[in-house]
Image (tube, rainbow, N blue to C red; front, side):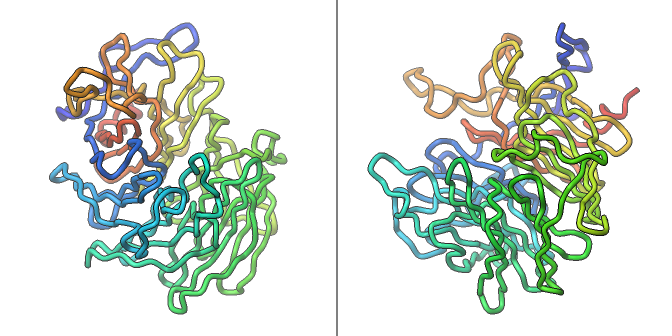
Length: 424
C-alpha cells in the first residue's frame, strides 16, 4: 500500500446504530496556493488535461479568478491563467471576474475550456456593475490563454463545453437571481466569434454535455432537457422519465441542481441531483421526445439527506462522487467517497480524511486559527475530516478531490479503491 493512501476501514470495520459505515478513506493532501484566493475557495472546477496535469479554478472575490495547474509528478502548483489580465481589465469589487466556477472541459486539442463568473456584491455595490462573463481557453502546449468576449451582459458563465470538430463552444450563463436563476443556453462559433442565444432554461448551475451524435444537452427548470442538434441547427425540448415514471417532485422543483457527466462513449448520461442521495442513469440513444432513465441506488444507503457537489465519470465508465451528510452524524458534517460500477450498488469507500495532517498549518504564529480554514476539523479519532468537497476527477491511477477552507487537493490511489470495492 502506497504511503500516501490509507484505508483505515481495513483495520476497523463496523457500523453505528444508524447503519453508518465507520471506515475512513484517507488521501494525501496538498495545500494549493493561498495567494490566488481570499477565502480559500474554489467550485466544481477540477479536470485532468491530456498532459496528465490537473487544472483547478480559484476564486478571489472582488479581485480576480485564476486557473491553477497541478503536476502530480512533482506535487507542485503554478498559476497559468490570470482572468483579469487575459481580458485586459483592472476592475475590482463586484465588477471583477471573481470565479472560475465551471467544471472545466478538455478539447481534442488538449486545450482547457472555462468561463468566468460574478462573485457577490458587497454593501452598496450594484449588481449592474458586473459586465458579464467570458469564455477563456487555455492551451497548455503554448502556455497561452485567449478569451471570446462577453457572452451575455450582466450574466456570468456556469458551464462551458467545446466541440472542436465543429468549431463550436456551448455555454450556460447565470444571472444569479433567486428563486429563479436565468440561465441562457448559448453556442459560440469560434471562427466568427459570434454567440447565438438558444433561450433561457431557468435551471441553476447547469452542466452541458455532448451525446454520441454531437448534440448538446442542457437541463431545463421543471425536469425537462433542451437538446441542440448542430447539424440541423434545431433545438428540441425533451421530457424525461425515471423507471418508466414521470419525474418525482424532488427532481422537478425550482432549486434542483443536477451534476451530469456522460460515459466515455457519450451514450449514457450519469446524474446526481445535489440533495436527493440517488444516482441516475439516462439513455442518450433514446428515440422520440423522451429520454428514459433509471435510478441506480442510494449513494449512502444509511443517510436521509445528502449534499453532492462533486461527481465525475472515469475512462472505464465508473462513477465517482463525494457525498456530504449534514445531519445525524457524530461531530458534525461528514463527507464520504462513493463509487459505482454498472451492475453493482453504489459503494461507500468511507469517510474522507487526511493521511498527512501536517500538510499545512491551521494557526498563525501567535497560535490563532487562520481565517478560512474551518471546513477541515479534527475528529475525536484525531483525523482531519474535510466536509466541503466541491470537485472530483478520476484519472487512470488516482482519484482527486478538491476541498475548500483551506483550499486543498486530496489524492487517492484508484487501484486500491477499486480493490476495496471488489472485495467480497
